Length: 191
Image (cartoon, rainbow, N blue to C red; front, side):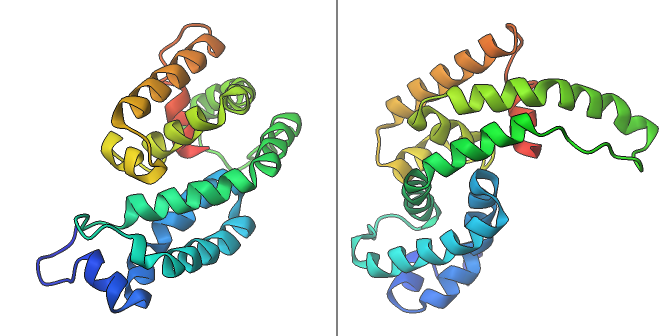
């Protein structure tokens, strides 16, 4: 949350773009790393802010927070790399996770549950439509509001709601009818 003494994002876009980068780069990097991995995220964070700088004149002054706008740019860049993302999800499913020899007893149950759900969840995420996956990950991983997701993807809030509903329904079916809010979304957040 911005303090009243800090300039809003509109002022930073128009005057001190480096400060805008400092304020939001970690959020954008985290989102991109979850989608594409750390190495690709490093490149795409830079590309996201380069695109934003070039398009800074298109930022609507009525918005005080640039994060939805930046997430929208980042999501469009992810779309350009979607084939690689799907290959990575399929590879992740095919490669067994290394056993954690240092885990504590209280982690065993969580690890077993996560391992059991990982393959199903990875496959279910790969099977989601591109738009549905984008909405789900922005809501679940990045904890954006429906309105922020709508702004990020330049779609109506109603479309966000329907895509999220469709994604949750598909995840629920893939998980054998269990509630994706309690299982899959927890796995997405931490996976």
